[in-house]
Length: 317
Image (cartoon, rainbow, N blue to C red; front, side, top):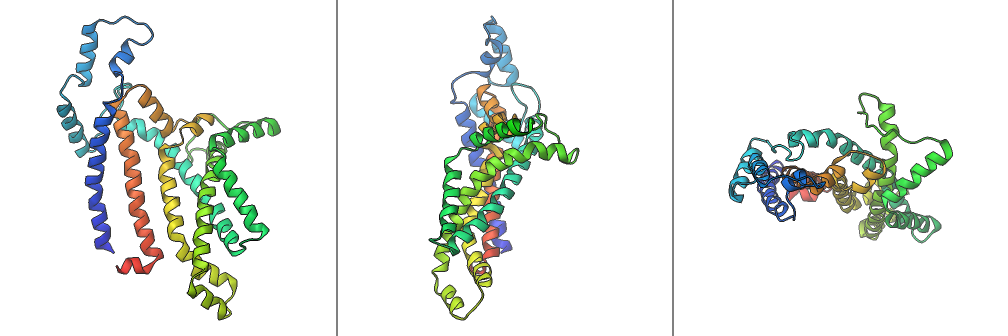
């Protein structure tokens, strides 16, 4: 197990290097120039000499291969460079927003798992009954409802019923837990509902497949109670695809909640993505893409470990 884990961790380095190289090339294919966008936007007249001086200051006048070598050299020192728009370190720009996005992703995952696994198991065990139909309606509605639209409905409900809206300013959890949770619990519910819909359907499908296995029928025929058969024998073997969905959805939440963050006025990683692309901030885009790629890579490594813990046969191989 340790050898397998060490091998997977070693593969992280070339994977992230390939992602970094691809992102470096692709962001420079985007039409537009950050220098002209900063200096000329709004109808301001700037001479060509000033534009060239600014390009030299940002290092954009260097050959592409030299810019790439400088950036990769910085990555080797864990330095993502400085934002071309604000002049602040990219690590700092990301760090002050990652806390919010990470907490929101964790809270949405807790909401989704708390709903998805019990409902999926219940629907599979009561297949064909009103319980199964109700759970399927719940999950289909979640898939058909965008999380940002549900967020708007939540805000309207709070405003109409209680004449109250969540705080607009983010407060860290350890500074004021009440203010923090009163702001983030609503987007977590909106995002977690859709998240749970995907996981519920996967849990139900996996449970139905496992419940048809011979060893489950043998357990029933021996007279075992329903709870041990469902929880101890069926659920554990059905969790592998469910864990995959949960892990990949969690990785998506780190940078994929652009519209939801706009609805709840959250200054997270998703909003930072939009700002960086609209400003053609190459270094910030590269840092954000590398962050998302790193999250996906390490989530996949974590999923492999979870597979081995859930299924001993994988560990022995």
